[in-house]
Image (cartoon, rainbow, N blue to C red; front, side):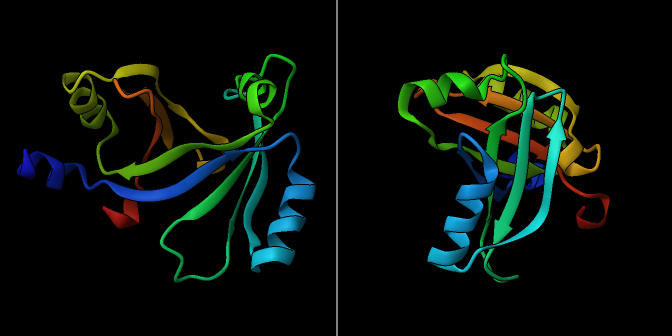
Length: 147
């Protein structure tokens, strides 16, 4: 198991936060904690969301991804309807997304979405898994330069 995990190279990439719209939350995080937008906003028609990424510095362990609905049938709308948003998922970067999905499936995870290109990651593929303990995780392919 340890060797397989080493090969997958999991690294916490970001914490996803569901919000009704990006602008006011971005401004609040800027004023409250000193966050700044480092990437985005991006409209992702495949995921049906609009996102941007924030950090306070290059030393942050992970970024914050703000996620707002792009369309009326955006999957993020159901979470917003239940509890007005908040922490939504953790995203882990992996060196091999296909093997990471196989690994997750062997451990009883449900593959919510197979690997598809994502606008916010310059076309690198993302996938979604749901654990037995009802946690949602996003996987994203590592950049070639980090492999």
